[in-house]
Length: 266
Image (cartoon, rainbow, N blue to C red; front, side, top):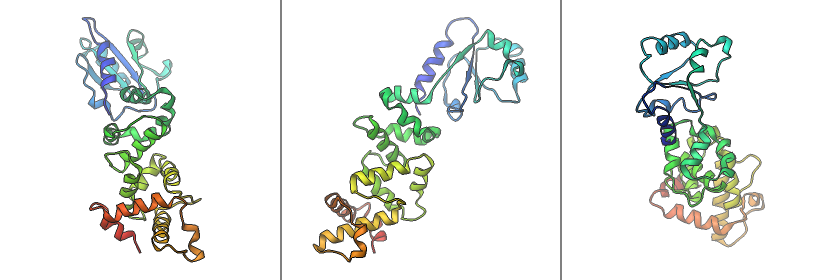
């Protein structure tokens, strides 16, 4: 994740000749993995824990009293009665940051779509996933654009194209698929199956890649043979045959996915 907004805001607090202490209480620990990447030019960063409160007070009022400090605490502010630092906080400044707001600001995402980011906020807990999300080319950051970028970043695609995402998913196998497991972690599995319905017409109360691939292949076979399949297979036939045929043809003729397609084909 780009921390430019945070750095700019924090660095603006440490200008001038007077000593400055800034407390940043990150109640949900959203930035605990990002704090080491901050480039604060005129202050030292000190991480507060539940066990180093007194040690921190000694640092700020003793051997470190000549230095500016950013005190980062990945928890909510303690009650004054339990806080050794209450006196220090009174003459210090506080900083607040919200990861969703920073993401939206960075990428020019309208405030109306912040709930989409909030719904999948755990996705952005890791730097590498967040960087992949930033690197995806998206035409418009509306709900679909954001969701497609999240799916693409999860499967490590460079483009927010659903057929490309499906191709990568299927190439990883139909059972214990690592990308499906990842999607489930971030609440994106339902998003994926929703777009399978929108794009291919695949609907199932208990969807799986195995049943989805069977539906793709049987629908393709029916169109190519120009004949009906046995009645017990009708439940697998999808109602968007044109999209299915184009996708399966692409899989069969792709140098990237050809071998994967053969593995999932009967």
